[in-house]
Length: 422
Picture 1: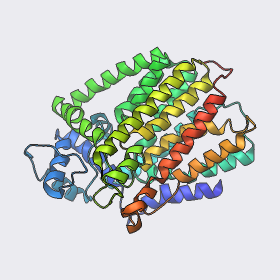
Picture 2 (picture 1 turned 180 degrees about the horizontal axis):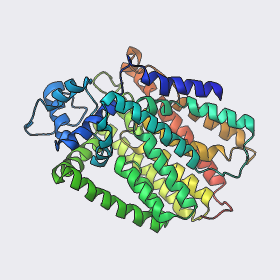
Picture 3 (picture 1 turned 90 degrees about the vertical axis):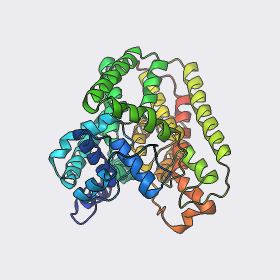
Picture 4 (picture 1 turned 120 degrees about the vertical axis):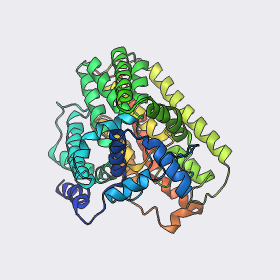
């Protein structure tokens, strides 16, 4: 445990704060997006035109038309001493929420946001869906705590200045509220998580399928309220550009990016390739067919499985919720390392039942394998990973997600009926 905390403190707290170290480019995107909101500038267009006209990088979003202010992004990058930031892919609400950070320079704002991320992590750990009355042996507690702080997606999220811990905290709070039958409030937290990152939208759909109508209706109402508030802040034009132009192109783009750990990333590296990745085969049409069919198969199979087990027990609900989170990581077209921090929820749910059956060692091996593969560190920029079968090793985390899904399905099928009702 002490070793894990020391490692976490160095990698995720101390190292990013060293003055000579560069700050996260992802956080730079949040900061400039908030600045675009403040200046009523269409920042989505800024980046799309910039990529099209200067980098010709069509792996990102490009839009047609003429840039009304071609030097805007260059001026902002130079003014704040930033490198080129990633594309603006978040909904407008997130950049609105980042407006208070403009009170600081972007480097100081990053440090403030990193402290806020620690608060979100603590909140998520407190609200994780585990049985608080179950006693954990001290040795187990130390082992689990140590593994937590070695979890690579957690380190990537914090030192990368990512928003995923905010989303994780909101989701765990909603689960805690559902357990205590505060479903209207739980829906509000799920709506806010969805307004920041769209992945939790599938969790709202799951609540509808499980007849958690108050959670579903509350989430829908709050999403509409947040959309209206966003429109008031940024205007209809920016909302339209994001939801009708940027989001559809981003969601449908088959990206073989080396950090994409979803099924789409694996298949794209196999059949499509990337700027610096040469695929072993080349068949984009087959790749899109495989990705579409695999995503539909996973979602339909899970829906049928959940429908057949019409249980109202809290443990089973948490397990199903965890399975949906794992499935989202697999079927999304864009799942990066830091997105996997949400897998802390299924890990927590599964670990508390690791001693309940005679096959616990098989299940623990699956969990250990999942953890090891997801937390595996490799230098994806090395030439070995850029061509041929070496590109397939970039999908090692995908294998970890599949192992975690296997462990969750085993637990769910064996222990679908719990005593405590929601």
